[in-house]
Image (cartoon, rainbow, N blue to C red):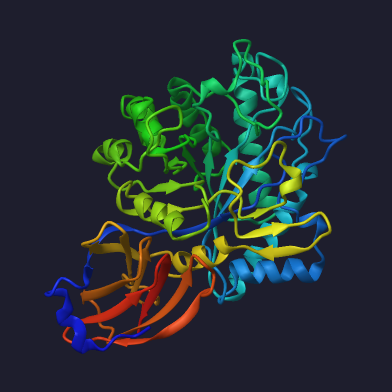
Length: 474
């Protein structure tokens, strides 16, 4: 609801929350929000038990087109980034031919259609591909999801990565720009003492100690250049959270090897948050990123997986933490479209944008509407701008146009009760802001809530309990 500007003085009467945004004060460039389609992720026997976790294979052509428009269309999420996994079934043994098609058919179809739709609107995508796990023969244990890389097959793994990138670029025409070494490969506790997997619910992996990451950053970078893929850059893989990236030694290992530091093209990690001390502790912190940027200030940092949580305003607060506390340049949440029956043991992160049933029906989940509040606001080339709120139940994200054709935008996240906000805005040419809102109770789903005219550089807004509201300058 709109509130008369005459009530702006309520802030001085301690009735309103002071919110301040300054679009002229930029913190970091923004590369955009993204989407991750997960296909083959757990099965140990693809021939006997093929897996399509995203459920694309069950959907009608009509349903597929609807989802593509909801994700990539101008009225949809307008994502700019895509993450694609490289699973362990692309080569049967040393020297054997690669098969990049069988286990990735649905993921590639999704990305192909999304890229086409994106380009129809004059936009483009940037793709990062991540090694999920290597073929069994490359491990010391000689089984899928074996813990340790066999040194005798180090070069085989390098070529496995490079050939996949070449396939995506040359056969599919996909704009792959980054290759990531691992997916939570730091967590050595996920194997037994023999280096085997006890629980079938684990997705693919390989143990990646810091020294192995450093070595492969250099090896893969050199191999990409030899293959003529100079514009594809290497990332250090994806630890579970930013705390581990720093405190488990990965950032230090990279800065202590000059060659690896120079070969690095992007800083990556998952951005999962857990504030409770213990096994899964993980805070939003920029310490590791800061260490690397002290020597390579031009490097960007991406969150390449993070939880949708309960698909509510509190989940969006975690995005705020990654942006303003970890100081990242992009966020790609975990598996945006999920087919629950296909995840052995149940996905520990079941929030998503879409859910596909075994009958081939899909539903739009609350996570879609919440994510839409952020993804449309932060487009590539914009800048994260100064934004503060004098209430810890209110988080504010500001994206400055920064010379793009996108409007200055403000995202207000209220995880508490209904609150009156006095929003002071500087550094914009906009005379008003148009608001769109999603609420935890789903009574509002990206609903337009009015035009808020600026008066003396501010406007007043009543934020409902448990809500995310996005304001676009006009």
